[in-house]
Amino acid sequence: MSAVRFALVDSWVVAKRDLIHWLREPVRVFANLAYPIISVLIFGFVFGSAMNVFGGGDYIEFLMPGMFGQTIAFGVGSTLLMVSMDADRGVTDRFRASPMSQTGVVAGRSIADLVNSSLELLVLALCGLAIGWSVRDGVLNALLAFGLFLWLRFALVWVGIYLGLLVKPEAAQASWMFLVPLTMLANTFVSPELMPGWLRAISEWNPLSATVAAARELFGNPGVGGGSWAAQHSLLLAVLWPALFVAIFWPLSVLKFRNLSR
Image 1: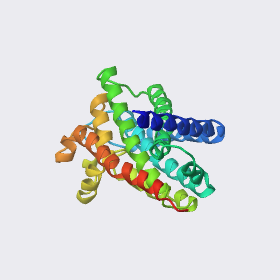
Image 2: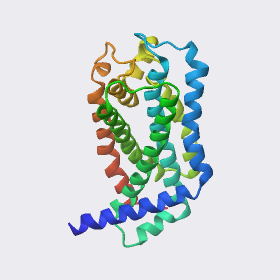
Image 3: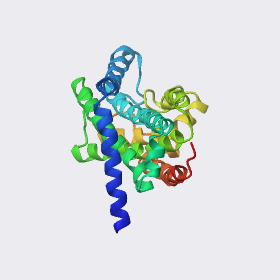
């Protein structure tokens, strides 16, 4: 129990340190919160008039769960960059040289990122409600949907930590060029049923699609369903995909931190 308590205390210390750094960069805070809002307005009102939802329905209601998903997925880029910068500047080495729990150091990063992501989801949800998005299946189901988004974010944090310990900041900054197409090759903005066959298969099995589809179902928004196994079992996959990422990248991140030689 003392080892667990030791790890929990160190996790909170590292998380608090990351949150304080975040608050001391108001421009970064504004950019993180403004980008999803601007994206909603552009996709909802500029492109929305030309977009169709397979099976019918309001495009704004179809769009919002996709925007939640893309915002969560983009967070892995921030995690990757911050971890890489800490390692490059020697901060990670100082953590390793201190009498701290090695698991707690990397876990603290995940706590801070979850707090940041929760704030981004809240701001984005308020923006969606202001432009016509609605939750139709009750508050409890809506909370479960947001829980799935945070579960995915928690899993992606460990992907970002592991990759951040592998690459330099310059390479970490280039992660956005891969995140944008990965979030587009999903059901975030367009129904997979309207895509070509090969692209539809990629979209339906994209882990982000599972979370977005499950959230649409829980919110009561349009765009639910499909003929594939993945589309019909989106809620199950929304739990299993992140669990797989955690099972793979959590131990890899801790192991990499222990063996880091920068």
